[in-house]
Length: 178
Image 1 (cartoon, rainbow, N blue to C red):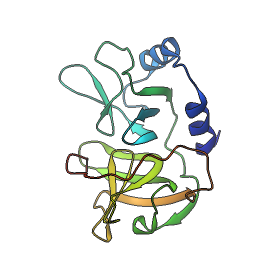
Image 2: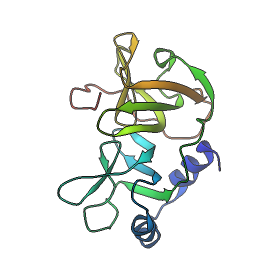
Image 3: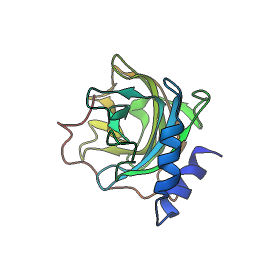
Image 4: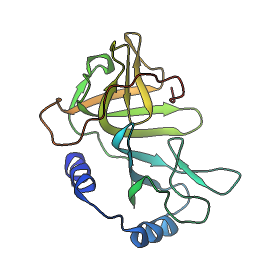
């Protein structure tokens, strides 16, 4: 299933399958890559794919985002969860992070010292002045340059060429991950 198809399915789903996600979380092997789709009012619908990190309270994180509460139950923003065999290639055409426009559907592969290599996919969100661009909660471009964690960026569809909901521009991003 393509990235666009997965996000479209998650957007169209009115109800979360908590039982299926709980089973998938429990069945995840240690250090196995996973994919998780989240929905937040501020960031819209976004997907992370990478290796899970377990923190001291027992909760598990994917790209700095908790997907379970330490009990194996999915967090409220989690919409879908699945184990992967590997991180695949990113869909779409390679672009510079600074070439993304607000509302473009895009994926970025990032490398972070705490979370390793992971992918984030969603609509590109910008500040009103266009100085910062985020995908999900991750800054991918700042002040005319790619963020230091960015390995590569792909545009899946330009703004207006997809049906994924686009949140409003971000008034501030001081608390977002860089």
